[in-house]
Image: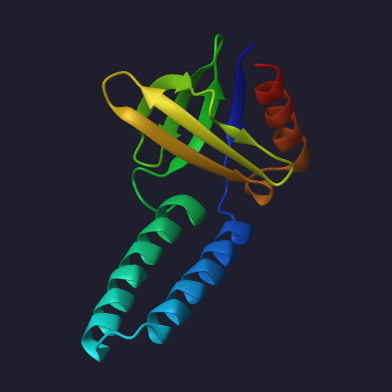
Length: 137
């Protein structure tokens, strides 16, 4: 059974990451470090925040996954924004919940890759079908 799923940018993931970043900044402000260390830490945190938002939530970078195809025997093909296709296997450590699907994909010789699928990343029926397919796989 082969199924094709297309992802769209997730507003829910953007807000979740924004709340986590705000909590991190609040923690940095409360630390008893010098002002320069806190500013430097905030700048590094902002760079990481911008990268994660662009790659996983807004799907703007070349390595962002825009679609994937589920294959037989836990196989998956990831389709990136830059047009590359990467094949691999879905790990048994993938997480499936009613609001979020976190796919851990292992590539031959390329390590692990994670794909975050929030409920607002695709239409309701596709998200339900993906969850059912992953639960029974």
